[in-house]
Image 1 (tube, one colour):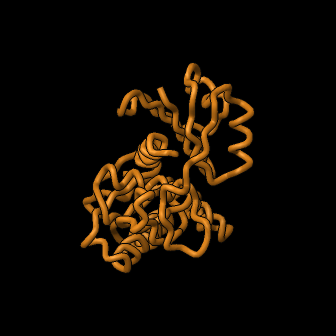
Image 2 (tube, helix red, strand yellow):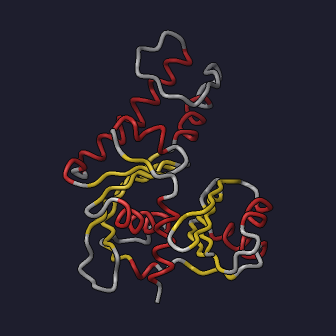
Image 3 (cartoon, one colour):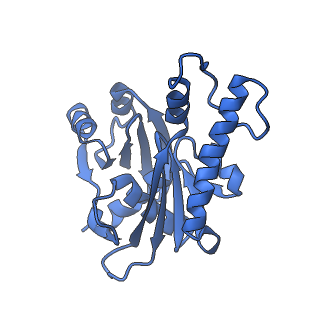
Length: 229
């Protein structure tokens, strides 16, 4: 068995693979849950965008932690992208093929483009993309912008708002779904394979009639584990 953990800004996304299959999956905010989930797993590949949380997990777990092999991804990018975005590209290659666009919907929404690499030592080429607010942070920012705005359930609405809560939900639909659509048009998504992932990916994928795979990042990590030097 091999473990893969995606350490995000708000949650830990954990998976256990046996042979080539994902046997178990869990999202949690608690380190104690992570420790229990990976009990008996000897090696865990770590995908992390939060160094302090990665260090905490390393201290909690007894398993051998393996860093994500970033060299498997060719970069056409001027800065260092998050390991989750790199893993998404590898996962997309295995799931839907290249060229591909992955929309990862969590605390932030990342929309990234991938293609075949020129470097034979790499699995995928990361071309860059966009980062925008996720569903929960969007609602939090709007309802805290004014003292008279009420808190509301984090749902999208596709019709004219007839009260303040409905107006907020329609605004969220326009901002988030509309924002994703505009960026996908910039990335020429109709001529590429499209897939959604992340904790809220199922909320948005239906508006684009696109496939959703909650474990795409973990699957990319597992492929990278098997291809690491």
